[in-house]
Image 1 (cartoon, rainbow, N blue to C red):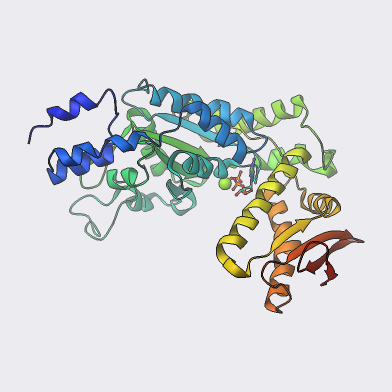
Image 2 (cartoon, protein in one colour):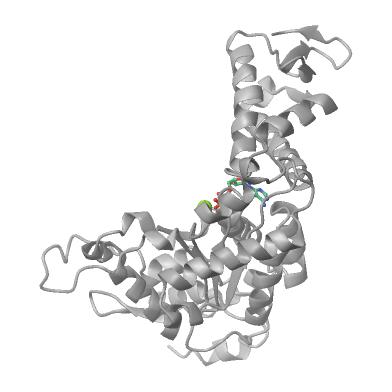
Length: 379
Ligand SMILES: Nc1ncnc2c1ncn2[C@@H]1O[C@H](COP(=O)(O)OP(=O)(O)O)[C@@H](O)[C@H]1O
Ligand SMILES: [Mg+2]
């Protein structure tokens, strides 16, 4: 089959490698090639990506500034050769948006948070466990049974018609066994990986994210109220940000060899969330809840109305320097979702009604109305 026709399209429509592979394997004709055109239609310019990310990840501008330029470079066709499209190390306190950043990027680039390949390094704490990652070499016990995680097929499976970039997340790398760190070093260095069966995986169209909790304990000493951190602080002081950054990078340098650290393009330290950031995250969570209710309950859907006092109460209960937005999410679950679910189970929330939450004493009070002006106490 003559593929010269593809070259004519390449500068105008950068061809999605997954589809190109399909074409090569299937040896289809020109009809298949014509289907390449719509692939570029959904592609977002990098400026849109920055905006869409800022709507999802609150209060971490350094993260956006560190990541988006690499997407821009790739889209311009000027991504690095012979190495991954970008390597980022995300550090900082728990629940500040490190993992969420990669999920949000998958949403923005590919339309779903599931389009990312996630490796939980906690599952690779023993040296022999790397076989799960790259497969056992031929002749070794279990060669046929192991299905490596990092295959080219899997990397391509998390791309989409919108973008050929795949996202690979190594979560909590400080837990990885030394043999896994060596494998990672090879990937970061050459942008390729040789699997147990001798096939090669290419990462040139992959953004690699490493997250780590290194330095968290020491950061907590800086952040914990009993050590002088003002809970419900408004803006993290610039010197506090710098201190956290220093703690995190020092911890990384102590744990990883210089050649590993040197192959990381950008080290980003996530900042503790301010009260304003948590308030925005609360709105995002409420919007998510509304979407869930509308999509799951259909005609039984109700609307949720939170008074200003109820929002303030959730924020005061959900503010935690130790657990970040996780504590806020848990608080929403405990004080809003669970009580509403109980009302639903008791048949007290007819479809189309309004559940209004108000602060009352040391808690929240929920009232249900068929229409917004007919509120009656529910619990
Ligand atoms: N900066 C943020 N912007 C928006 N949501 C956030 C942010 N930080 C945390 N969250 C919320 O809290 C949850 C937990 O955050 P996560 O990213 O998993 O924390 P970690 O930094 O420990 O990886 C996320 O799923 C998200 O809903
Ligand atoms: Mg995480």
